[in-house]
Image 1 (cartoon, rainbow, N blue to C red):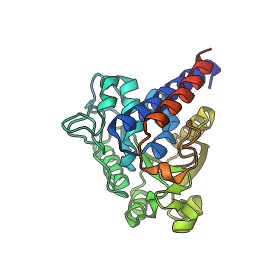
Image 2: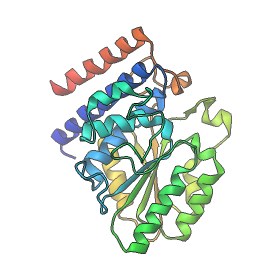
Image 3: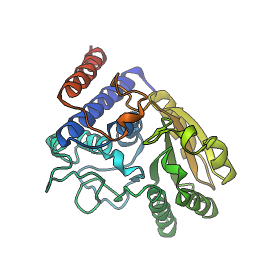
Length: 280
């Protein structure tokens, strides 16, 4: 990837992180940690990878996206706002009664949302259905799905994984956000989930790896996944929960709480300082 384009994407990802902090602060609730860890992958998908049209969110030929870990929608909302699906000012109304942006994605009301999600483990099943629909219709659009590492403790994820392999869904690419933290602590302490890659391989998936915060890594992984034929692909993406905000990084406590006024100011100062370096 050219350095100039990489810097543009880094700037967008920084704005996405600011949107996450803005939204959760004004909501006084939400999930900033896991939202911050997926800022780059959502930026890459919506600004590089996916075939979409913000002016026509229901365009039939668009690629589809499912945020299976729907509680991390502050990041998805922020990237949709950056992409022009709705005004950035909406982010400050996150989770407010009657507002456009609620605590989980709603495909019926929010432009750019392809699937309502939030019940952990269910998003990947919906993504499989979309991928099957494309096959049946002989259409060429692809489906992308982001899962949390804690989320894939759900049995439904592996039922969907079996189905995707059986149906040869090579138009489905899943991403596991492996930040190693869930609400109760370290993944390895909660359920002994590892190794994630070997589990997907055992279910017949093609497995790739990426540094979640490196656009060259993401480009290589998505390029490789797009070339796979005859089976689904998954990118196990190593990330840092709370990435970009010093006191949130790799801290499980930031899974599901909002910053207070002082924390909001510190977080925004840190992100704006980083932005100044990127723009300089």
